Amino acid sequence: MKHVAMNVLYSLQHLVYTIPSQADAVWSGEASPGPSYLDEASGGRDNEFRQRNTTFLTWNLMHLAAMLKRCGGIPAHGNHRSAWDAGARFDHPNPENR
Image (cartoon, rainbow, N blue to C red):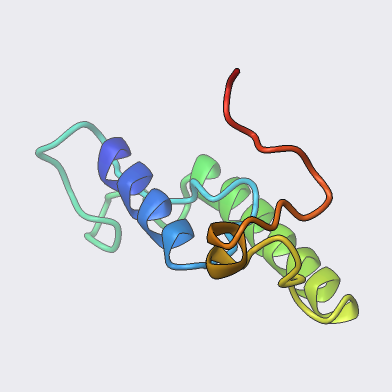
């Protein structure tokens, strides 16, 4: 489950999703097999880890959204592949290891 979540987050950031910190709020229960999140007696709804991390994730998501809204989103400067390919380095030296 951990590797699946890591792969999903990695994939989303490649699609230009902004992932807030503390994004691991998943309920995985006991190492499989075991009851699912909403199954009777699973403890999913009352799980302290899930409640804490979902709360942290929610607040971090709201803070991040507010910051992005205040600054008009993520600036495009320095994020143009065609400009990079044409030689622009956006006021920084080429990042290749030399």
